[in-house]
Amino acid sequence: MGHFDPDSRTKNPNFEFDVPAAAVGEVMVGPTGTGPTPTELARLNGYPEGAQVIQIPNASLAGVDPAALVPSRRFGLNDMLVVQTAKVENLPVITTNRRLDTQIHSGGPRQAAWGSVVVIVVPR
Image (tube, rainbow, N blue to C red; front, top):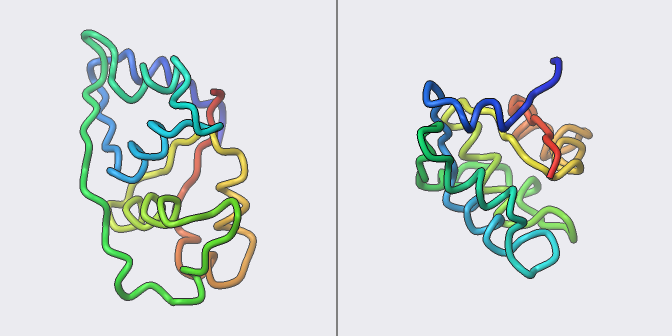
């Protein structure tokens, strides 16, 4: 897929980022529960004269195979809402969570439910 530099996109006014409400919630909690990193917060809020960042509603999980909806220690409701919204809206998931791709593309019910979702991992 090649290198994806998120800051070259977020600082470019020709780009728009649609961010599911669940992703906003995840960023606001932060990776350690103490809130977002400065880089994550800047990406979420957008840069002056940069890309437009738009919060969009979460897609419904209705109709998703219940076996895919079983949470794990590292894959919870917000993760499910983010990938379902990406699937419904035909958007990639751009994340700092290196495990997310494996969590949905390693086979089983999650692969069946969300295997079509492209996950792009960026540095924190």
